Amino acid sequence: MKSSVPLPVYILTLLATSCFVSGSSLNRNEDPIEKETEFVKPVMASSLKRKADPMEKETEIVKPMMDEFAEELLKTLENIEEVVDPCPADWSHFSEYCYHASSSPRNQREARSFCQSLGGDLVKITSAEENEFVLYLARKFAGNGKPTWIGLFWHPESVAYYWTDRSVPTYTNWAPDEPNGFAKEPCVEMYTGSTRLPFKANGYWNDVPCTPKYNTVCKKLA
Image (cartoon, rainbow, N blue to C red; front, top):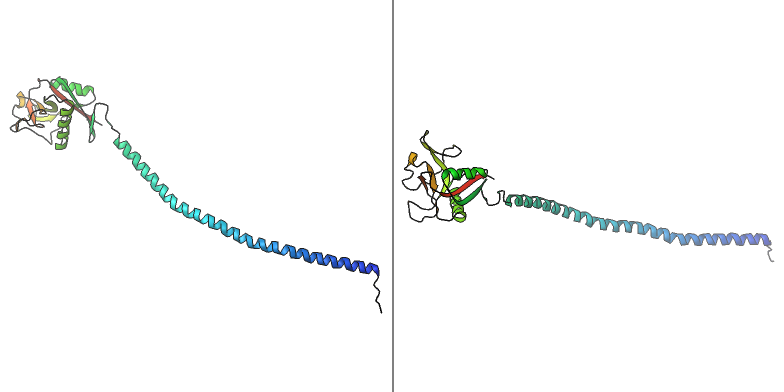
């Protein structure tokens, strides 16, 4: 016996079946995308983290290097400042002072006035090293063989030698048997051009009258 289904019911059944099938198909099409998205998100996050980690590590390495470089640069600049000559032109630097040697002939009074006009005074020598330096300057820049005036003089009231700043000498380099003139020879020269030993050896001091025309070495603070 044949069963008879009304046409409207049959059509509705077909439409419902079609919608169900289409819906299932859409669900099947969406599932891979969702799954792929769920998979890609952690992968991308992991990749970005891997890229960031080396940068952080590189920053950790580079920062101390940059700090060290900056510190070395500051030290270099400080050294450059120290290397720059603090003395005027035609002056030479030694320790904390500037020195100027002149070969123009002057008596002791003229020599001192000359040094004072330059902002200094006749050289005051306080150590063997400074004595050698003054001798070097005198021979290099006033190398005419003549002695040079230094700032030591006989003070008759005190019956003693003083520097021009009135300080008592703590270092001396008198030639043998010198000084011997005292009030008659109140000024002091340094031998710079003689090689006769021992009495006129280079660098030795000698008391003399203040009238001869000698070389000059001036000294002032740097």
